[in-house]
Length: 230
Ligand code: CA
Image 1 (cartoon, rainbow, N blue to C red):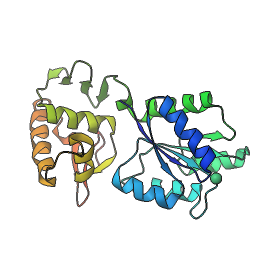
Image 2: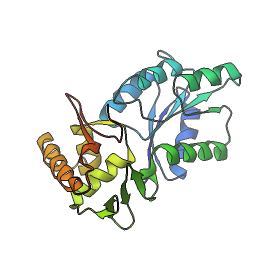
Image 3: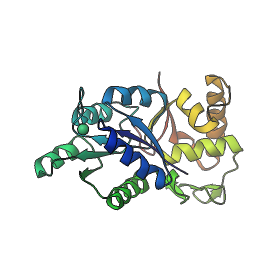
Image 4: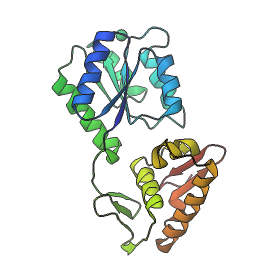
């Protein structure tokens, strides 16, 4: 599955180069010239990864990373910081605010792609077809089999896609409209209420192996899959 990668870079030539790299690696590039523009784009769709330039006009990269990491809706999005500076101090500061990695400009396309791949593999397994296992619940995207502690779980196609999305984005909170967008696709006109119906069906199916509580309701926001109990 191609990943949606948001590029936040104010220099058009570098932005172009980054977007080209991303597209050639088989992913979708979404572009923003500033943190403010990026913020509006994120409100529409949560990207799978953000390439974030350090030196930006307005809100700079470091402040923006800090902001993303402090918001429940965006804190799980992996961030790779782009920096022209090579100083150890800046790298440490970037990683301290929660960036997953950094790339120093000028970068080689090969290095950039390797880093993107590594972060996606670590953080967004839906970009691969590998089986995912969380708290004894196992989903195999290739065979469409779901088991809970080795017990077979029967799911309808929508519940399967919903669970796949949740497990690929574990710990992240998703609003109903984000779920509609990601699981149902944006061309389908369904009501937010539909999400609740399918969540109920999914929980019912998961109760066969006692995994229904993995799907947590976040009051006033939406849903999340988590093996942790708050
Ligand atoms: Ca810049």
